[in-house]
Structures are given as C-alpha cells and as structure tokens.
Image (cartoon, rainbow, N blue to C red):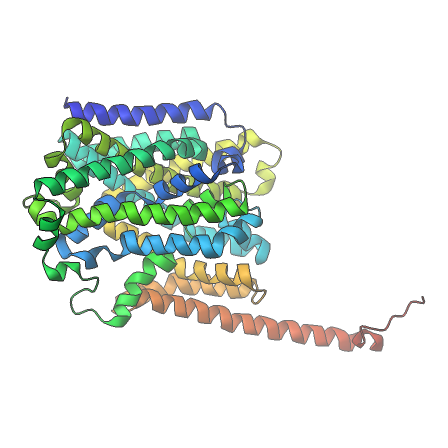
Length: 479
C-alpha cells in the first residue's frame, strides 16, 4: 500500500474517531443538528469556510479554469464568496433571531404547514445533489492517491461519509472544521509555493498565462448570459440549509453575522489559490485524461510525500465536512418538517433515530447520484439552480414583508420548479434569471388576488354584521 494512501486513511480515521467520540455526548436532536446553538466566532468562522470550501472549489472549479481560463470558474470562489457576504449582511441576524431549526420552520410560521412541506420537498434534492458532487471529489482524490478505479473509491468514500455523519452530527463536524481549515490552508499554501517555484516563480508563471485566460467573460457571451452565470451561485445559494445551519448554531445573532462575513473573507483568499494554480496549469502538469484530476495531480507531482499527505488529507477532510453538512440538511428537513410532530413529541431518542436514519438514506441516494450525475461542476451548478428561484422569492417576502399568503408562496414554488427546465429546453440566454422573474411574478399576482379576496371577505362581514361594526371606535358596551 502506498505510504501517501496510508497517511490519508489515517487522517480520515482520526476524523471518524472524533465523530464516534462526539456521538456519546449528543443528547438531543438540537445537539445533533445545530451543535446545541453554542458556536463562538472562531469555530463558526472556520466551520462556515470549511462547509463551503469543498469539491467545487478545489476539484471542479480548478478543472474548469485549467481548461477554459478564468471564465470557467466565476462561480467559485468569486460567486460563492459574494453569496457568503450577502448571507452575513442580509440573512444572519433575522434568521437567527427567529429561533428556527430549518428554513422549513420559517415557511410554516410565516405561511402555512403546506408551504413548509412543499418547500422542503424542493430543497431536499438540492442537498442531495450537493452531497453527490462532494462524493465524486472524494473519489477523485482517493483514486489519485491510491491508483485505483473511481468506482471503487466512490463506494468506499460514500460508506465512510455516511458512517461519519450518522455518528457525529454537526457537533463532530464543527470540532473537526477548525483543524481541517487550518490544515487545508497550510496544504494549499505549501502547494502554491512549491509548484510556482518549480515553474520559475510567480512572475514567470503569471507572464506565461495567455491574456485571454485572465478574462472572466466567456467567448461570445452576452451580458444577459453573463449575469445569469453569476446569479446561480450568488442568488441560488443564499438559501442553502447547509450554511444556514451554521449560522443558526451560533450563540448569538452578532456571532452569526460576524462569522459569516469572516468566513466569506477566508473563503475568497484561500479559494484564489486553486484559481492561480489552474491558470498556470499548462506549465505545471502535462496533458490529463481526466481534467478533474488536475489539482490532485499537481500536488502529486510537486509536493514531497509529507506535504502531499497533509494536502490530500486536509482536502479529503474538507470534502467530508461538506458532505456531512448536506446529509445533515436532509436529516433536519425530514425530522423537523416532514415527519408528523405527534410521532416525535416527547421522545428525544426517537427524534435522534429519525434524523440519523434519514441521513443514512440520504447518503445512499447521494451515492447513486454521484455515480450517474455527470461532472462535479455540473452537479454543483444543478444543485444551486434546482428549485432555488421559488425558495429565494418566498424567503425574501417571508422575512421582510407581510405581503402574500400560502397560495402566493405555493405559486412561487411551483413556478420556480417548472420554469427552469422549460427555460433551459428553450435555450434562453438567461434561464435562471428568467425562472426568478417567473417565480416573483407568480407570487405577486397570487398575492394581489389573496389580498383582494381578503378585502371582499372583510367588507362582506361588515355588511352582514351590526352597523356599529363598521365603526371601530364605537362599542355596544358601557364604560
């Protein structure tokens, strides 16, 4: 067995042991899903960074930039960093103050139980697709290290991820995120220094990059198509339960906001390392049969064995953290928003069993999606765009206005799910922006109808009642 494989497996086993240790201290579903709402600034910041920094940044995005230049990686790290910034500025405080467990709780409180369930059924596939992308990345890295087929490493990775997540929950994830984040920063920093030094230094590498590879604009791309490309990671990921759970797990609204903003900064800075390496790709590695092996191959060729183990282990751990969050999101949606409350009330142990059982089923589903779902980049983009338009619309109206009721929310959700594949099939330049516009319009139209119907009902009630009912200032009772 290769020594680097032994090192990476030891890294994973240590993480698995932490999950097992933490599982003995989990007493409630809130401990399992939200780490007891006890996160401070340091743990929360690194956890937010580690949750978002996974397969797409290091494997999918670097592969696209290696092939197409900077325009292939606009979503990551730039789009997702902007998304994190907006989450900190707009969502962290109001969501934390509501004391919810999932976004579904917000929709139940603001609209209705039906809206809660429909929204959750739209959100669950997004988390599953996200988990599938991370499993693919895990398999790509482990395959590069072990020199075995991706199918074998995918099955092994799925088994490890499911077991790790089922045991430790968010508490285990939070504890390992700090170590993972530091190790990942050190590993990527070492890779950047060694690889660029071997290629002649930063100046020579930058000069060798062809000018067109620095452009964020795709060849022949219109302004509308460009805006659509940016909107998918920025707007579509604003309502990601994986990250919102981290904000809700903080000990105060201020910590939630500050940690999200700090996580955005760390994410952007560290995320630029794979970008620079990918831009310099032709001078770092030769032709590759599988472009998604770019970053692991750069590490394998340029790092000494110790640093390579550090890099690969940290990257694998970061991916495990991201998968963990996605599977926990599914577990929280099912146990909190879909399973009837009468079945769970009064039994914390039963609530934990349901959450853990759902995590196992979600992991198995994500494994099959990873095997048949296309590239990492495609899976992540689909996860960000699937149904998110309607979710974004009802979240905005639900948090900041009193306009619109259950029917308006359902109309927006249905429109968001239906409009995107139609827009894609018709070849529109901006399918995602079109879907948002359709969902927004559906909410407005049905919301206006709801308000008109409510006004008619109110007038009808007044006409049928006492004449004094029309005068709120009068009363039939004496002083």
